[in-house]
Length: 307
Image (cartoon, rainbow, N blue to C red; front, side, top):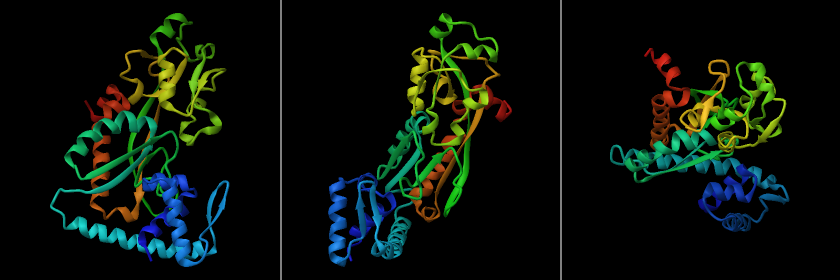
């Protein structure tokens, strides 16, 4: 049986759609479809029920799934053995990191350039999106998210804390009523998330400050919120790592409107033995350790370190 075809079967079963499987496999969706059809022809049975909402395994597909997973595990073991016989320090292959949009763009992306230059045979994919990246569906090899995985055979660690504060642009503050206490916030429009599209309960922080009376703009994207606040749309609760160094922005009610959230890092247990996964895992831990001032603000970072 062709292992390549089984890979396409596995990813489709996990992702539920041809498009999602194609993204994971880095091919066109027509290639995924062709490979599955070839596998079904060789077995003489349909492996999926096709519908408008996606692909669901048939009984034959469910029977095949554990055998395909066993072959995948064997393939990973071979990869690990090959890696063990490479020259010390040399890493090769692909590692996909799934993370929140803002953290991926502002904290990880700038530091991945140097890491990639030091490991030219290692390709790092950065999946920085305003949603939860699913480890169970193999959307990524390592995930940095806002919640610790509740179940599954995964390794999870607390990566770092980060601060959020209330901001507005300088021009907005000059043109509108002064904000001297929390009660004054009711006179101002806010920029924030769309409640029914929140991908984590950890993003419900406006409830902790008191629900705004009105919104100027709502978005699923924290980067879009940041840019809207900087353009003068209204007030917004933003991560310090995005807004803290933006010269257009000013902190509103310093010391009175500050929140803390936590990033968790996780990966499947089966990835632990792969040198490239372990190297990226340790790299991400080091990035978090070195980024205290960026993540929590220079004053908070100094207090934490005792400086």
